[in-house]
Image (cartoon, rainbow, N blue to C red; front, side, top):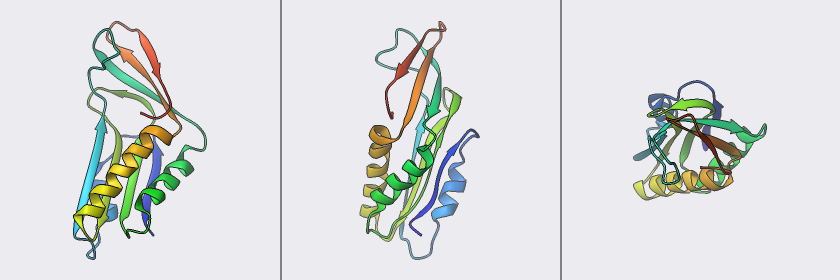
Length: 141
């Protein structure tokens, strides 16, 4: 099974758990990506203190499809999760772990998946600034 995990979670994400899910003696390369809430945004007037993520009801099925498409016929193993709810600065919003026989495939699958998440995953985020003002950011990242 190529996609070992494709989950939406209200709970904090564990990098170690994702890496453990793709561990396999046939795989010679593992890559990980962690997307964290940062304290600034080019469009923000002030400091960013949190992001509030909201998801479409079908988001988990879409995430699984995107992960499978990114893996394609590479034989790579994928574990991916995205948080929803309020996340403070520094908290992981998305974690991706990919294992493949070779590093080129591991990097390519990981990159393709995060790019697809940013453009195609039906998750919206509301950015919260230090002064209490908020701004919705569009579909994906």
